[in-house]
Length: 134
Image (cartoon, rainbow, N blue to C red):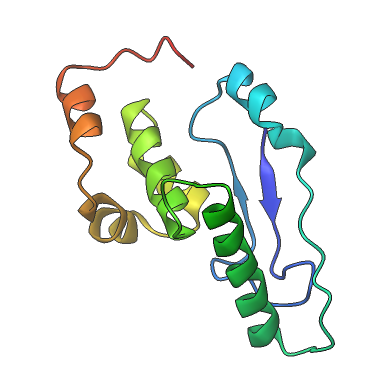
């Protein structure tokens, strides 16, 4: 369940966080089966442009439109990265591993990702949430 993220996307744009290996923040196989996470099909970009910025914007806009179409409670792509970090904390994954998996330093994790407040996760952490669900 490791994901290798390359220096570039399949359409040639560089990845923001560069080459790295990431892991899921939780290892619940039932959730992975239900979501079909192992059968991901990225959208094909049918555009004549070879400009990476144009393609990134196209990809990003399609992702946001898909979230809206599916009536997702969030429509910002980065919300999923913040949620992943919070779930990792909730399930006891050390900050160093969470930061590495997200492709940045512990300082960035501390200043950016931990700045979002999620009351339920705070309550779970304070009540010593049990990790038997993963």
